[in-house]
Amino acid sequence: MSQRILRYEIAKESHRTLIHEFMLEYFRILEPITASLSTTIDEIRDFFDDLVSNGLTGKFSILAFEDNRLVGVCLNCVKELTNEAPDAQAFKLKPDYKSDILNGEYQYDNANRIATLVAEIEKNLSALMPNATKIFKIDVICVNPCYSRQGIAKQMVEQSVKIARELGCHYAASCTTAVASQLLFEKPFGEVSSKRATTRCS
Image (cartoon, rainbow, N blue to C red):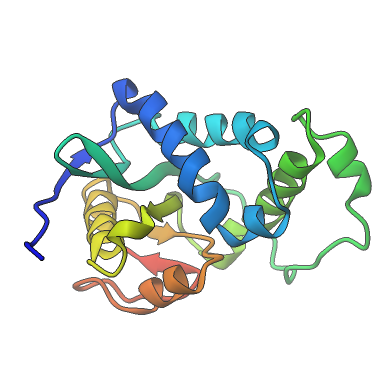
């Protein structure tokens, strides 16, 4: 089989619909949380729309193409942290999230379940990364299964970490739910020392 020629681009507003459709087709069924909830397109559409919007807030996100076909998405954003002292308490789940889910911002419970989990995980970022005021968040990594095991995800993450350095971010952080993504973040990227939860950019 001839080697595929891929190109990588910074995501732009003009890519919004293309990214959203890609996520509904692939990320919805490949991401372990949405898959475990058997999330339908209607249930997750608005949540994915917000994820895409977040990834288009600046020139942070990376797309992979073969010709005009979108084959990989890496949605990123920058999070500014306050200078307040971080909460040193250990991460602790509440006994019940029913109220959070029922009163969530989305129409469907499955979308609110996912949004609640993400918010709970991310609320302690400042405690996990002391003295950091600027964090580069890698929110979504997804590759078309037909293009798997070709280094596309690794290339998108490496480019993302490069952007994070250029922006002066103290850490790159990602909540990795898929095993392949966890393994990807266990490996160092150049001079960056890698951790499962966070990657320092200095």
